[in-house]
Length: 181
Image (cartoon, rainbow, N blue to C red; front, side, top):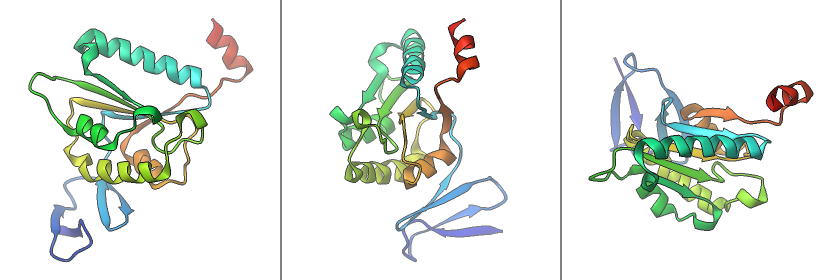
């Protein structure tokens, strides 16, 4: 028993995938149908506490740099959001690269003005990233950082199925006391 799926919307390009062999989530993008499975190396950090998000990123960068070296940490924000460079960094392998940490600020669509990326760039990134997601190496760790994401966007919904989401919200009064200790 197999499930016939059109990947590009045309009847000549089909892929056969056994339905019983893997659990999957699916999400429809214009003219594409993707299987989205949870990835161990894709993370989405969100939350109202920018300080806690920055501390977690700092901790992960330090840990990664100690194990693999700082030269394999790549960071992209609204200032240097070059889509081809980001896609190449995420999906290309290197001769001497063992692991990579790629941090992308402002994706999937941030409402915070410091971290905001234009809708056209987000759409281009979404198409490039989602179409290659199956080819993401286990040696590449991708960390998306969006302080106040627009939860209506397709990319946010797709990353909800693919990425491990971690929310960093401002603690309430008892949480602050615990945080201070």
